[in-house]
Length: 66
Image (cartoon, rainbow, N blue to C red; front, side, top):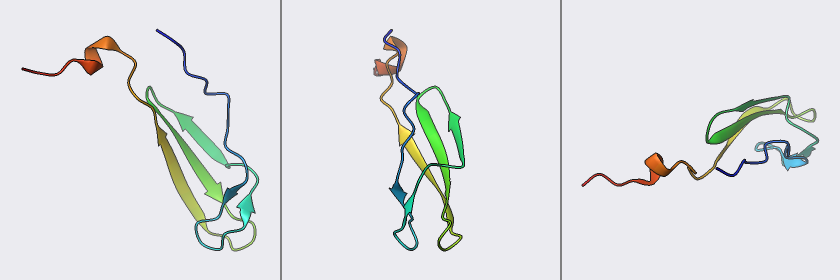
């Protein structure tokens, strides 16, 4: 199975409230097929979460039930 690169953290994500760029997330969590990030805007104080969902690479996850 090919390994996914989880070392790449998003940067300069715009605030969902005011649009100001946020340098980096204040928290992140890795799951088997997803990454979650918590962002906190220094300009307006708004906090929000983004989630990246990756396609499954396991063969058993690609099988379709008959």
